[in-house]
Length: 218
Ligand code: SAH
Image (cartoon, rainbow, N blue to C red; front, side, top):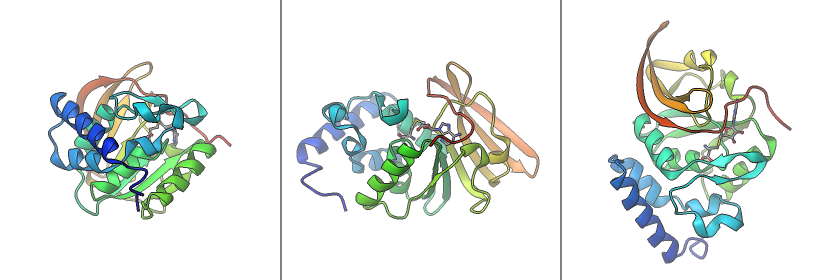
């Protein structure tokens, strides 16, 4: 459970302001807004940045990575259209914040991180905050999780310069992947699996992510 002394009414007030800002920027999905209202983003931060946790900005976490900007988290979550109990695979656990949002939206969350330090910190934090049903894995997201496949939805939270083929084949028919695709900056894509070897693609706005990289780092 989230300790009330760590999530004060001041934090909740700041969070409400952030939600208003996200609505002004075009986030309309109530399920997403509710989840972002509920999850205390400031607890997913290095303490030096805690005071700024409710600004709509990305911030550094360990291993040279970032916690995505709230607007980006909201945007990807909105595109994902999570239904209760759907199996969602996230690539790039990072701070664990996006995983917590997906859990709060009702998904059964599986999340992979290639940096061991981030995997350990985020796994411990998610447990401590009571998100015990989120399953975290240390590994290379390009491989996905064949043992747990197929998934209803897959979300990639790093910029991909190639589409991870194996992941497309871990989607259920009718399921889709939300992926920022591109080298220096990325276009948000939603790729739907329409049949065994049939896929279709929709294109959304431009974003900048840290890169999706192969292999894992100890
Ligand atoms: N979803 C995170 C965002 C973290 S930034 C959050 O809410 O905080 C993207 C993360 O993707 C980084 O932690 C990076 O290490 C990780 N990453 C990059 N390539 C990966 C890969 N092939 N497999 C798993 N994680 C990867």
